[in-house]
Image 1: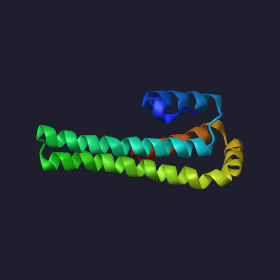
Image 2: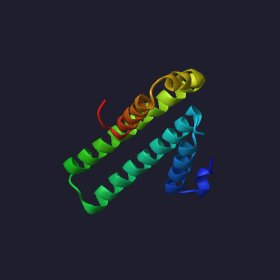
Image 3: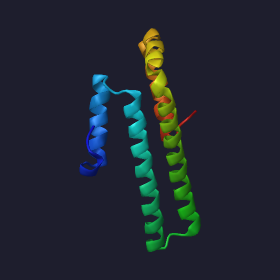
Image 4: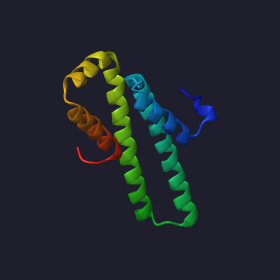
Length: 121
């Protein structure tokens, strides 16, 4: 995995995308990736708050934007906790996924992605 201090978020995203396409991503890497994304979301919320104060954005508008950011960050944190709890059971989860149809496996991962992005539950 790339050293966080010398890489951008875009580089990390590309690296994770490549790892996913080769099938080499394990649950520990997914847990780490969601932790990194949560850290970036926290930093982004702080920057939004500072920018809103600097440009004089109303408190209501700022609260609305920060509320959406907080919800997104909370969902990522939940995904991180889930991946972290699944690490000891990775072999069993992968075995279960191997027994289902490929379309069903894609739906499971899509639902996880939708959950993290704040979509439907």
